[in-house]
Image (cartoon, rainbow, N blue to C red; front, side):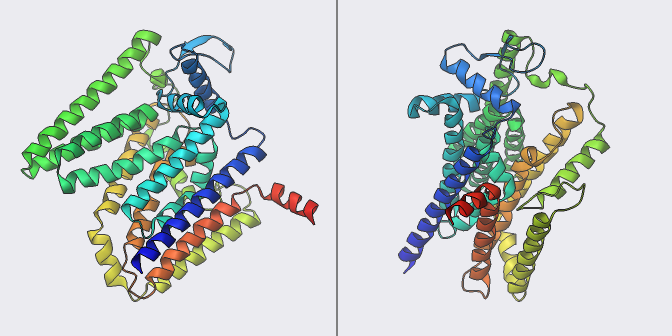
Length: 404
């Protein structure tokens, strides 16, 4: 019986992944820009440079210095290398190779969630149906890879602390390097490595702590070597030569971030807190409130079990802490550098970690307690509906009218 349930769970996970890939590909084909932005063009140009053996010297594609050769420092090289590698292996052009990379990392995320909880991996994976992640995985943005790294970081941190084997300390190093090579803000993983080293030292777990300190030092050396190489080649460390140019003060940054986090609560369709709210946004928000109310009602007699599950759920606790550290680092960087205001793209790591924390607590509830199983399937249905509502509706309706 258990084996049949696991097979059924795997089938639902696979079907959701196929549906997700189909939805992303449809969105890309319908959207005139192919879900690319100025940033996307630079990622693709860096991938082209790598493919052509030009050592990441790219043409500036916008502004008065168009077609001037500059070294690619605005972002780390990890995402362009993945795009170029995917293009080489698949023989796709760089544009479609970037979309392939995104969908491959969706699949890797699903497999990681299956490793965490096979019985309800499809429920955990359904969170990818939220607007934020449908958008991120449609665009050619490095966040598509970074989100997978954030989930890995949560798992590796938890396993390092609980299992305590030395190999996990170096898996944590690899994860931290991976995150940094995807986005510079990945340095926050190094801060978490140091924190864990100090915690284990205080707990008299000296052997593990020693190797965590080594992992932290190696991470710092790698980051230092990378930015030093940038400086030698380009004359500056990263794109953060913009530091302190027209940056907002800290209260303004906190307000922008709080506003961005509030908008992230609209899971299906964003309302940006200005202008008249449209009917679809109003409807999806009402649907979300209704689902939330149903979950609270369904578990109303299980408060003790729910609280006990939350209390012992270390993985969810780690996810919340990682989200908090990422947010703190983002606030710090945003207060000294005028990059984009925190929106769904920059806040997507916070969103995925907090959603994971909530859903993992729910899927860990015993099926035997009243309402638990229904709640799990309710969330799966909710996020599946979200995915479908984020399809190009006008395009689909037009083609349906033509058919009938």
